[in-house]
Amino acid sequence: MDKTYAVIMAGGVGSRFWPASKAKTPKQLLDLTGSGKTMIAATVARLAPHIPPERVIVVTGKITQKAVQDALPDVPKENILAEPMGRNTAPCIGWAALHVKKKCADGVMAVMPSDHLVADKAGFIEAAKAAVAAAENGSLVTFGIMPSGPETGFGYIETGDEVSSGVKQALRFVEKPNLEKAKAYVAAGNFVWNSGMFFFTAQKILDEIGAQMPDLKAGLDKIDAALQQGKEPDVLDDVFPTLPSESIDYGIMENAKGILCVPVDFGWSDLGSWAAAFDLSPKDENRNAVSADAVLVDARDCLVRAPKEKLVALVGVEDLIVVDTGDALLICKKDQDQHVKKVVETLKSQGRKNLL
Image 1 (cartoon, rainbow, N blue to C red):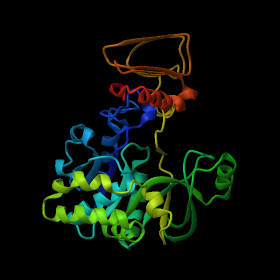
Image 2: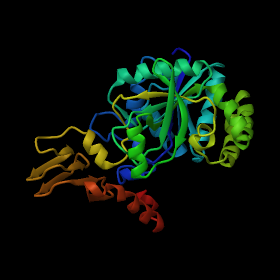
Image 3: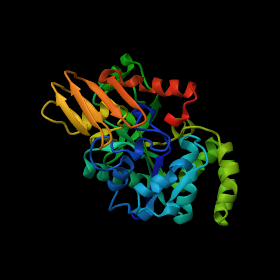
Image 4: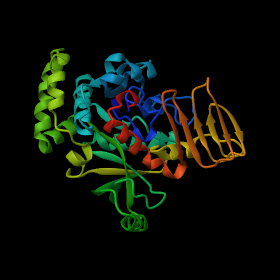
């Protein structure tokens, strides 16, 4: 993997984790499970030593650039790219590909979100090696998560014949299904969850962008011309906002030919909610997950996150999420945590940007 570059996508906010996750302190910069590491630091750490910090490229936003640098002190500052504005994953990956190609003409990109969890790190590396080998041969490759049940919150990939050890054909990508379809996919046995992790050479993805997203390719060409002359900052603010806002799935992967998939089962979680954070956090004898100064009296199955200087007392309650950030307090039932986004939407409609 000596020509492999990790491209870490770190541009999201993670509104399901409000009030801890805000524009300046997004999900990837938080320790949501009490591990002692931020999500993005854990993502980079699981790649080492196979992909050292100098071959890690992070794409984030301007507002979080400094915080990402602080969270990843070993990653060279020039490898932390700050988008002038978010334009979804296709422009993000295309821009990163320009930088990888400049560093290594035949470099392979291992593209992954900054805020996912992996329990089996050795299994992750072995799967990555198989994916990189396939990518070096010119294929677009993705990880497919072996489903643990009929999940309706993920897209699926239908897999076909095995083309090499651990690598299968990806026959098609399908959108998030209803429960009936999800059950059918799981029963079929050849469908996996779309992980959002991809492997390809920088040149291969740029060629695909040129073939399928010519408007994006035209904008990237302008940025690349400036990059080669050491003048990228001169054009980035003008060109990047004009790039089409599209995901790599819709823009490229769903219509590309010959995609390969590595089905994996390495204890993956996209950590999509406070309830998921609770499930993955250490717990006391009453199944409370607490990272705060707390007094718990007859309390069970609760998650508590609060500043170190604040005492939190829970009495006679269960199945609660309690998150205190000083400027905001969230209290909700664990089974209602999917509605936290509605709080964020309400605050936006009220123009209360200081809480976002």
